[in-house]
Length: 159
Image (cartoon, rainbow, N blue to C red):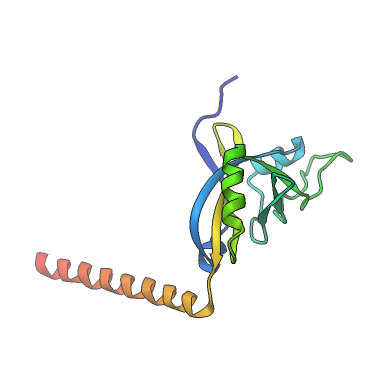
């Protein structure tokens, strides 16, 4: 049997980068059941409402929706169950220290298979205010307009 190589993205939390400032990221393994893995291999998951918390020295992921496997039997999983995340103890201790700061939370940014194993990219995030979101949109628009102007100037020079 051939081992899986590389990285295959399952789901991205596009809303997270709009709603939060991402200060740092971690890659963690996930403890899953068989039907969850099969459902993920079909490319079905949603990270929109997900978050992670440290409870009793362990990292847990909440509200990540992995739909039930279609060919599953009565032994199918619950779509929004708690899922344990796998990190080294030293990394969890660092996270405990950083999440004690006010306003910081752990958000799942991306769910993917890396060399056949399910992984999640967690971001240490600080919430944006409305004016921060508007400023980010304005900066993106100004950057896009500047690139457009430069490309049209280059086209005029060639002609």
